[in-house]
Length: 95
Image 1 (cartoon, rainbow, N blue to C red):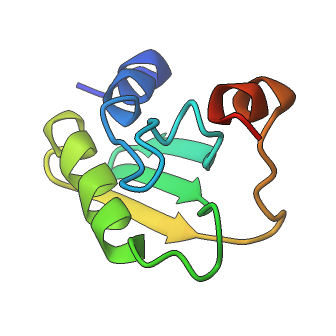
Image 2: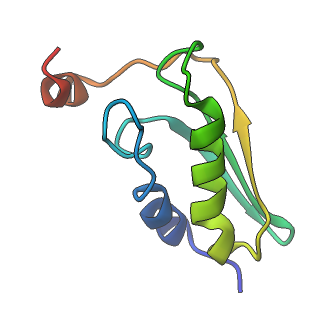
């Protein structure tokens, strides 16, 4: 069964950024989701190109999505465009 975009979003909301403690979906780190017969592809960014938790975040996203994709979840990192927090997120972070 192919998962819905809503199911994918629900799983992404369980993955927290280790530094900020906010999930990757709310942070706006997820740029694209593609659902296919061969699994799920996620295009995401990081809060900084120098993020020390890149491997941990990728593994956490893939692990969270694995039950929806028969174990085939792939994360592709991009910095185009660079991440910019929304005004609402800035208020949440106090910056």
